[in-house]
Amino acid sequence: MRLRTIATALGAAAALVLSLPGTAGAADGTFYYTYYDEYGQPLDGTLVHPVSGECFDIPEAVVESASAPRNWTRSTAVVFTEFGCAGNHYSLRPLGGAASDRLKLRSVVFS
Image (cartoon, rainbow, N blue to C red; front, side, top):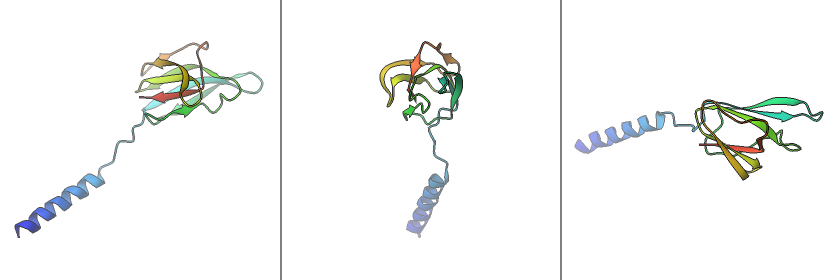
């Protein structure tokens, strides 16, 4: 009888743990940047709720680097001059960290 009670309690605990939502690890908020179209016109790009710890290549930065990053996520954003989070890097603080259009970037990771 006691073994059945323990097994039932363990099963209920396991079901509870499995039913709880896991943390997605998102950097809540939006990361903004400027990129240039084929005519050299500046356009705004965004990453909305990016996953923390994952390197994001800026898709529009193939021909010319993106610039002027603005970090309105709740995580620190580290921007890189090359794709694959390589090259020189610069950190932008959460909730308002920004840089001028002189800062060129091709990828970013959030902590």
